[in-house]
Length: 124
Image 1 (cartoon, rainbow, N blue to C red):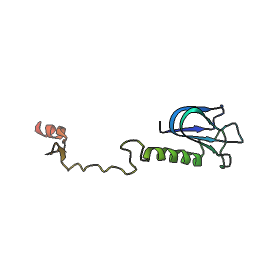
Image 2: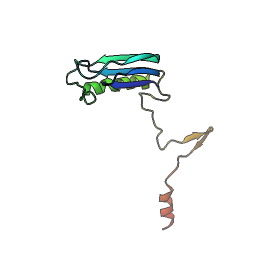
Image 3: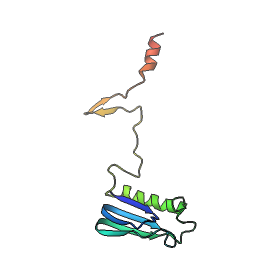
Image 4: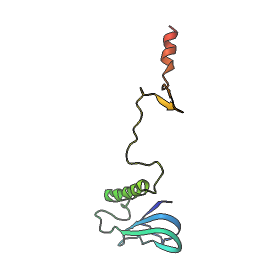
């Protein structure tokens, strides 16, 4: 697994196993706690105390816009990094125009057409 994110866990959490990056956002002055790693944990652990973020508490941590931006940024970093998902790209792939022919094994073939219009015309 490339990324795992925890939000203010109120349970004593110890990590084991393999994950590229585990980010634990917690509110230190609330019910949340830091996450600890065991000797069996392989990966990077980040405990991020967000008690000073305006409007963030245990009940609002997932609803806060700043927190949502941080979570999305962490996901984007995991997905779009060099070791991320194959084929993922920030750039939108350009789609071929319908009037262009497609190539199959070096041969140009016309794109499929809507035959229903031709059938309707031939029935008249």
